Length: 229
Image 1 (cartoon, one colour):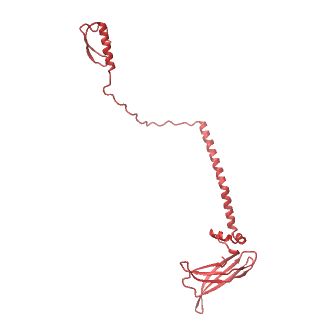
Image 2 (cartoon, helix red, strand yellow):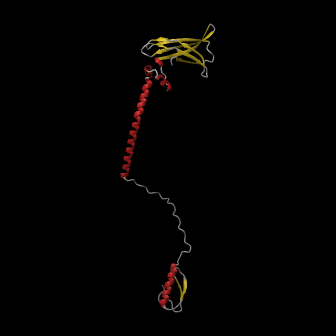
Image 3 (tube, one colour):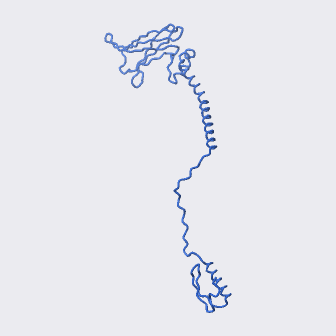
């Protein structure tokens, strides 16, 4: 807005104090001039636009250290109670699983240690024990201290087998015959013969001795078993 009397009837150049635009204002009636100046001034203000606006730059990522989150005392107490409950629950679960496992191990241990007594009372159990690789004495009999040696008598070669048959029962019994077998390196049988043991007293043992004439040269492994097995 121009001051009163600043523009006479001849007119004059004026400049906007905001945008420094210069234009010429005709002289005339002061009221008209005032309206013209106000209108022109408003016009300049309304169309005032930054000719080359700068785009807003994205904010740079902050490298500042994040604030430490403080946990309240009630939260720490709740976490501690939850941890204690979880620990107690795990102890109970371990105890639940431990009881049957210990029971099974105990049964297996007893069955293993007393397997001979079990087989003596229930001979069919021998098959079960043998299936899991446990040695049992069938019918309470056991072959022990078995040894072999090669003899030459009057120019003839013999394979002599010596050992003991032990009776583990509290009563005497007649032992079944023992089958002796020679096998080659491939596990194939090359010779078979039988040994008659006879009666063995309770808790006693009886020595056996047998000679096999002219044993095959490829017979390198001796196998034996009770015939009833």
